[in-house]
Length: 497
Image 1 (tube, one colour):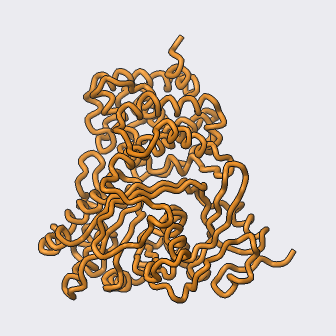
Image 2 (cartoon, one colour):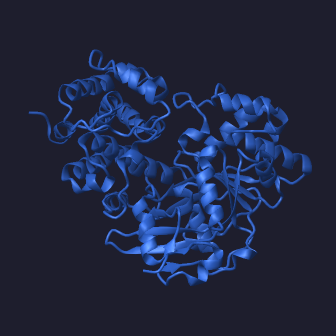
Image 3 (cartoon, helix red, strand yellow):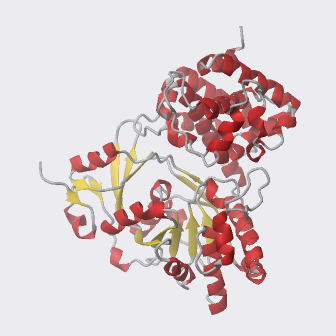
């Protein structure tokens, strides 16, 4: 077997025919988009849409310059640089078909912890029209229970004291916009691509809170000039595995960090930009006046459905989302949650049949070739569940609807946070900024079934709602008495003996 060809610009023409390579001259591309947080999702989503646009003959200014803020971004920075910022997107279909597409839309990468000034200057460059973000829910630095900006974050305190050497995304945005204002370069658009409801509004609120503390005149200018379109984004993108890298080597090329994803892809965006935008609608994105019903649908069904399967499945001993769907109990449970609790509190969504949408979610979850690990689904649950699941519980409490399906997930999360093991005693991989606090609160649940609810940053005032605490408390007691989560799922689905 011949040695695999290393992926880079000079080798593109020699790659096997099984790789679709960029059909445009990358040397002509300039980067008017600066993207902070070049993880798997960005590379399978915004960068993919932009690659499609460039291939269709879209304006050559719409390349992407990636930015990593922290030392942990050094690996992706180094890999992309060695590969001339190229990478392979591996699309895995449910029927086993695999498509390999080399993405060429990223043309540069800056590491902020090495060169803060370089990142500020790039954002401040008049050619930069959009600064987009995938920084995860935790990157927005707000208290989940109040929605207020967290000024006690040490990095925020640093940025307020050292505005030209920022560490946070808000410090960089403020520094770049300050420079643009002083030079007359005008505003850019800040475009969140994270799974947060009203992500543009949240980004705006957090940036304004930060800049009002740092520079009130700049804050006023940002409020008037900068645009923050809300958007709904969707594509299941699991963590890349060594097997994914090996699969490409077997086909003939070496990519140090490809990205894998499902074939489904969706992007719904409010058309509100400060200084022009790519024509993403020509390659499948949808521009709408108000993204709210679309993002609510996605967050309450797909994202919440993931968390339902993730937490319950992890305790049961399943490893991946498709493992859960292959288990009829879990498939039935998540679909019943969608039908009985999530859908009744959703507004109508123009152009979407919710039953068809839910059918598609079950099919996507069950894709046996994606292998989306439950450990990834469950990471940072403390920032996900207050957005994905708890609002559905609250709205059903207010309307008198069902809360049992969602309440069992929260009770299971309590046990998960306390014991950290599945029903077989296998240690669970828990990654959460609030891991210690969650564990300490959950540890008191065997004596006080409501102990976990004292983490008000997550649960707010749910501990004061009698209808919820009666349901939730009895479920916690039952799980601590018998941790076989399948029994409790069956009880919710079919009633207790």
